[in-house]
Amino acid sequence: MANYLKRPNGTEDVTPALIHKWNTVEKVVKQTAESFGFSEIRIPTFEVTELFQRSVGETTDVVQKEMYTVVAKETQYTLRPEGTAGTIRAMLQNGMLAEALPQKVFYILSCFRHERPQAGRLREFHQFGVEMAGSASPYADAEVILLGKTVLDTLGLKDIVLNINSIGCPTCRAKYQEALKAYFEPHRAELCETCQERLVRNPMRLLDCKSAEDQAIAKDAPVILDYLCEECKEHFEAVKSALTDMGVDYIINPKIVRGLDYYTKTVFEFITTSIGAQGTVCAGGRYDGLIEQLGGQHIPALGFGMGLERLILTMEQQGCLFMEQNKCEVYLAPMDDSARPAALRFASALRQMGIRAEFDLLGRTFKAQMKYANKIQTKYLIVLGSNELEQGSGMLKNMQSGEQKAIRLDSVDHFTEDYTNISLSEML
Ligand code: ATP
Ligand code: MG
Image (cartoon, rainbow, N blue to C red; front, side):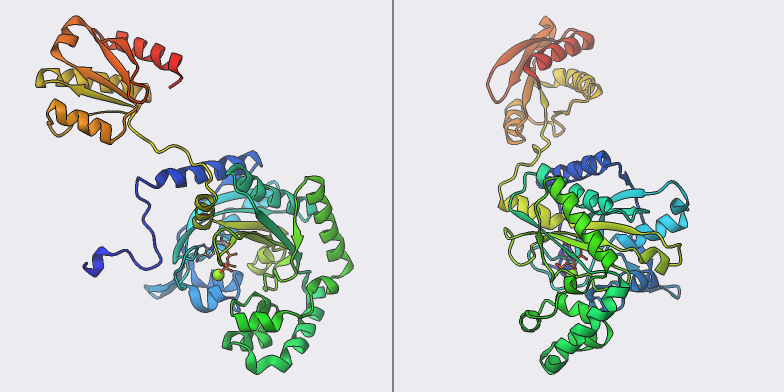
């Protein structure tokens, strides 16, 4: 096959046969976020590269290896690798942080990262994300975590473990970074190249390395929780007890880090074992320093990103239910050409009622129309013959049960009335 006929590596097509899965997930995340008082935000697909360098961080895999950057008319732009940076930029640029706080927004968007494609790891993927700006309260942490959990529960997912940790604030972290340096220094030569550099610039990111050798070395590394200052400790305790109050189970996982200076306190991940190695379906945390870092005031904030491809994969693995595929509701089949105008008229009446109605557009014979109606699995069928039209009545057939009900065809109004009565009684 010619190269231009192949989709780029690490991208996916969502065909009409699969779209109901995405519709299911998008509907649930939207409803859930709105029920928590979050409003939708839409941001550009690309931003000036420096925004991501400053917010995602220079020592992350994303910025070091994974960004899609283009130079257009001398400005460097990057396809968004995640949603937080653009969202905070939009909040600042649109004056949202000067309005009533907290600001609570959510988004569903595509992200781009140049990484090695594999199950659950794509180059274009989609995230549902939420960001809340303006609250330092541990209840905000618990609320955001609960929002994520509510989405997972509503979709029917099981066995997803909430992992939480606190990575403290710049004050307590300074001491911790020193301890990590001392721990890893003797192993310097055994570390991967990226981590050798991280050891100098940001040793906490070593804990997040994907290499098995590095993970083995990191096994007995000091844990941040032993280094938290009083304030961070209290905050973490309060988050944990809020979660317990709300009946949310969690485990404490000191390996979960967000190794950036302005990530603070709570970090969390929802992890499943159903889809193999890429098991983190949702990751988030508090980033109290980010808004200030980008030139705004000191406004505490937090959020998460949920990978929708991983979510759908997990749902498939666990046999979760999706909304039904959108299928034809009523197929109108004229028996001969003289009945075609009637098909048009009644289809139009059904569409005005919000019903998905279709009829033949290929000039098929009646027999071929029946074959097609079966293939598209229409729920109802109406046969329109000249006799039926002359007598002013025909049959509405339920294709699943085989049951038939008389329906008036003498006028659009009568037809509409009968259809409404039948569908109400059958709870279409
Ligand atoms: P990982 O450790 O798996 O690389 P990450 O730390 O890079 O994840 P985040 O930046 O926290 O991921 O992104 C939030 C969520 O987005 C992840 O938990 C995951 O569900 C999803 N995600 C991240 N990268 C990809 C990708 N390349 N393909 C599909 N989903 C992804
Ligand atoms: Mg990654």
